[in-house]
Length: 559
Image (tube, rainbow, N blue to C red; front, side, top):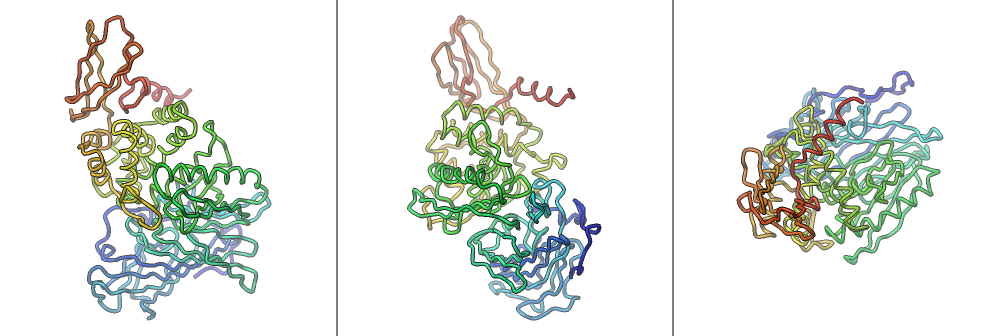
């Protein structure tokens, strides 16, 4: 399957080998034949060859048929094969399978009835696609440490898992359990997802690293390889369990690595205190240094922020990716259209941590920075099944960074609107499916925007669909019109498509603050003509700001 050797001149360049249109897609409407599959297990063996920038692989995939099944349809980059394929131990003729465009179709030797299990074993490998600009562009990253040793990573969120291994490339295609066996050259280590199951030393000095992970997100399986050193410790949770923590870092960085590792426990305590138990406490908290910025690879989060401290006193990149253990890995949006639940929460939790650590001034500073980046070009949610590219790429009609920044501001306003207790109860329901999570009483789950709205109604006893219809399903922000006449102040909400928007607002008159109900989207209150009036003095509500628009317009102009 692989060339025996390759010279430096033949190594793939960034962006090579080319990907098919099918492989570049992730998510979208589920193929009818794939919808018949329950993905039970994957046993994946990788051998990574740094000198030739190639990968050899063997996948043993276990499925249960949910309906009569006469073919397997599996996503796999055509650059990776497959080679030989067997079904339940019987090797198939080459004519029984084909992978012309990145969607491998295997004709089964018989029809499997609903409830029957089928095991497919396939060799795969070759030259995997090399990332151009990771992690925003996916593929392998073949880098070097300062002393010239291999430093390798994969990233697959955008293009999807099929760029690395044979999988079901949509959010609900999570396998129930994955075993990983990663063989690397002598002197290198391969930290990966889940529980460490031991290392084997082969006769020629290569090592095979064995791991096992439950319910991994489809893009969470990753390869990270380098001459790593490791810091480890244990966290005694407020829920009574003890969680092992690991940070794999490059040699020579021990001092800075220890400073980052010192953030693990307090960050974990913040999440457990406000959201709930760390979802994978029976596996590990894992972070690994990578030659790209970062990614939320389940229990082995990629970190490449260069140990840069932000003014808030903690590493935002580590914190953001770690938050995805709750918002992305424990709770996975079933459709890319709902990924604001991943990124909006992931982005919001940094200011929330700033508030937890230092108080409101830090929180307000961090939220203000995000407000200046809200674009409002297209709606965040479109209530249809979409691909990853249709969400993350503005050029393809996606909201792009608004699922981060606008999503965070939506949560900021919701937290004020429904109150502290209800906000965190809604959050727990979305993450765990229950408000009383404890280690052992929950499992990874799928979530959606509509479900989230239902949770808000369940917790508060009130219908807040108007809130989500304006903020998520329309691009333009609501605008608050203020008019003073004599001793009266009139307030009026203008919304896209004249949607109802009974959003209350705080008004400071002199040195007193009152909360004004705007049940019909308007209100008139007493405000002495000589009084100083400030509307929304603590910036609780996400609304149109001419100042922000002018700032953004100025930033867009060449200096």
